[in-house]
Image (cartoon, rainbow, N blue to C red; front, side, top):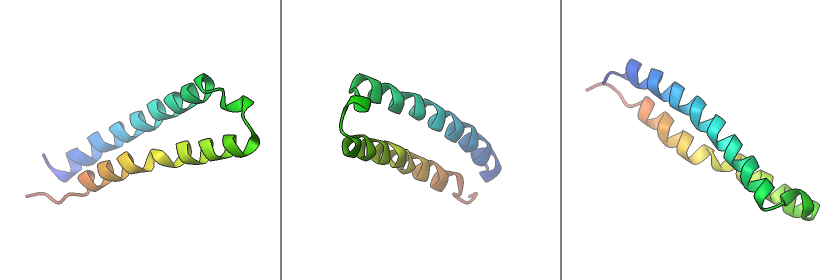
Length: 69
């Protein structure tokens, strides 16, 4: 697979990852009733949930940047 193909597939996968992750993060917040917790707990949840997607996205981006053989 060429780098160009990896970038195309990776871009599509990244968009899907972020969309699905956002829905899951909100769903978990609703199930855990984060909105009823203290403001500090709510802030901590959304900071952690807001940054957690960076790990798989970083792996995906490093795969996309892999040079051709």
